[in-house]
Length: 301
View 1 (cartoon, rainbow, N blue to C red):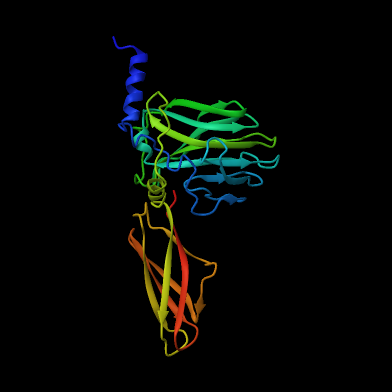
View 2: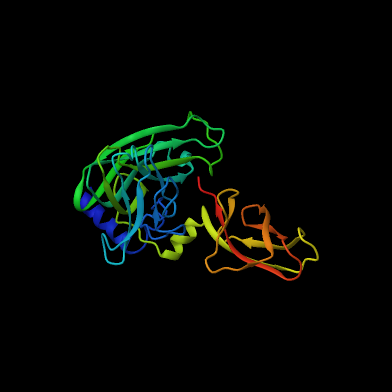
């Protein structure tokens, strides 16, 4: 019989050889991608793929550097007494994939109070009723860096009705759920199939960014034209996504710091399926007009 020590040694060798790549189902678990910014005080997606919410005053969430390791990043959430049920979570596509499977979540953390790791089932558009507070696990506070490991078995969901796989999801939540002010710092979050926590799968920034851009990215748009009247639809332009989107995204014009605009406003956006968009420019003067701006494409779950 093969001993567990021998099995773990083989596992370590496989990790070193790269055979265990793509096992981490969490995107941006090392908290390195921050397309929207690095500090947030509202209930929003903050660091890429991480949704922050609270039933009371929103917590403050920031990206930190060198908290756990040289050159590393982490997510820091600070709550106060009014930040009731504050949490950050990641929604992982295709809940049906996890039906009946044992999964293990591992992460590096510091926390001033105990907190909870728990899950939610979302069956997607047209699917069964969602289920919250599943597999709740208490994680003890730690003033120094600790490694948390939680192993659970997802329910058999074969009797449930699922919407499209790109709308159903398993939510992984880190929940403060205490009235006392709490500071949680976390990084190297990994969710993998199986009952054993393997070493954290480090991916390059470029790889992680590409995965994040399935759900959110920013596109630069330049418009230029020569209208003969005010209110003409001119300077039409297109934007191409770097990554195919999960679903048709919500498109929003952003202010460009240092950008320029002369005689043109944005008109109607038009999604070109999942790969890009078009936008009309409307003249506010005659003669040469131009505008440079950024457009965000949001296809988060």
